Image (tube, rainbow, N blue to C red; front, side, top):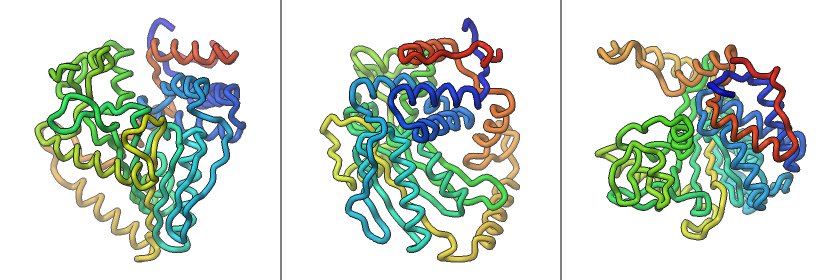
Length: 355
């Protein structure tokens, strides 16, 4: 490919599933992983979509991911559980943790489930979104031990000590999509820096510093060597992002007994699920949520904006557009995916690509 293309989502999903089956993943688990990655692309989270294929395949080859590994529940109570993912793909462990949390919240109104030995879990908002689409309020937190990169400097620092530590919430929307917040506690996820590097684009000011602690707009200064660092989100108020990053570290890592200094791979997930029906009828909650939506969106926009948009609203618009038109993939990312797939004997049919 010499220029960016749009790829049909269903064909890309089948291709991605074939890659993970070729890695040794059971067919149903490969389908779950590919569905998760494609949904990330469809909703505009390209940093957590198929660009991750190469990373996951490399992790399998290094033994950091064990396809098909059993998922087990430990330290289980009526409302809590620790899910040992056995170093399976993070999405496999993540959705098992979500299923466990939802089942407990259905019976006991609220639940909290954490994971250990979990691969890269992908887009955090996919888990909270799935819970909200079933009528639950959900919170999600995701950390990474040093083995998968402590890229984010503490407030006032110039070396990484935390991962990008995202957090997410989702609120059922009745007939509408849920209100969906999904954001890093750093200025950017690392995957977005990878996209900027591949696309040879300058970064926004204030995202990273180079190894000497100087502000930079060149993604290559982050990757080094020597490596730079991502800044906590908030700009001049970045101490707030740093504080939230520590909260995510505690919930996603420490609560599962995972050290913040041992060089383990993967992610630690914490999922909190709340049963709305324990407090009021779901229909009443939906009416109140709609009232809130209408009230907030009735605010006149300032001169820089055409409308008030709610958390997740733009994501669902991108979903509609990309479902119809295909997923855009830049040439360098596509070449990396193709080379990775070819190393497993998986080929892409030229007829599956539209420019």
